Amino acid sequence: MIRKIFKTGNSLVVSLPKEVLDVLQLSNGDRVSVELDLGKRKIVISSVMLPLAFSGVDEAFAQQVDAFIEQYRPALEELAQCPAI
Image (tube, rainbow, N blue to C red):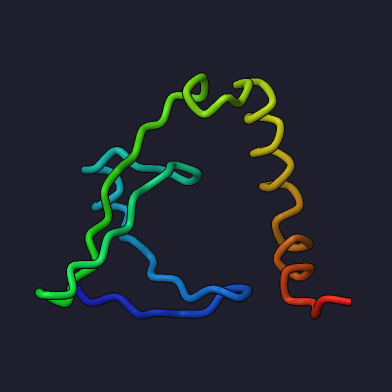
């Protein structure tokens, strides 16, 4: 399947088809590992399941941060594009 690279904020993005996400049981906000295989000129994306306790972050706090980011994503992306003062 062929996908197009597009720009969002200061990043370039490749969207993943819903069918692939469903099979891999990935959804918005999940963490993935991105590795580069130079020999084969490939990018390998793998699911990463880090327990919050391992990362030292309280689960309730992490959920509040996720909700904040989701609610204010457009404003945060716009701020990210502003030059440093």
